[in-house]
Length: 229
Image 1 (spheres, one colour):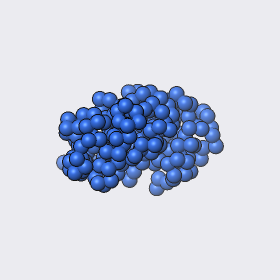
Image 2 (image 1 turned 60 degrees about the vertical axis):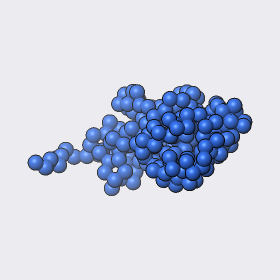
Image 3 (image 1 turned 120 degrees about the vertical axis):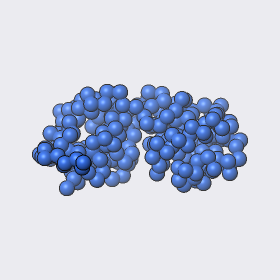
């Protein structure tokens, strides 16, 4: 039997937020923390190196698909040295299901060669060093430094963080760098890492792109629902 649509009305949107309202930002952070206290990175990894490669592969690809690919990829090429010395054709074959596989394979091999030649095969704990690696931008560097090393170098801005921060009135920008700058100004440094994890969980479960479940959202009273029809 088909499930009847809920008759529960969506909560009224909050009024447009005051610019840089610290009380509202604190309430958003608290609401997310209470709902998702142990939110974690969805990319399965056992080391900073594995997280780095998985994050490179996650561009324009779901985390679920990346996890399927890395299971065999890391078994075949467990270290930076192994990937650096691998046949590019073999790497392309392994990462093909993630899309844009030729570019990703080249970046992964170039990244691994740089790790071997410049960092002894280890992932550096430094933002500037990471973004110099092939295929590594600020987002990827923030993921690795925050999740693998616990270093709050910035706020990870993916599609979920972009969508929710706009809907919540925390940014008016579409550019990921500008969104990150806005969030870094609004959020305490101690929240930079977990905020992204929690927003991503919330975006997948409640504040979805096409049909946000505002009636089930613990942030409804704080949210102006910008861009939600």
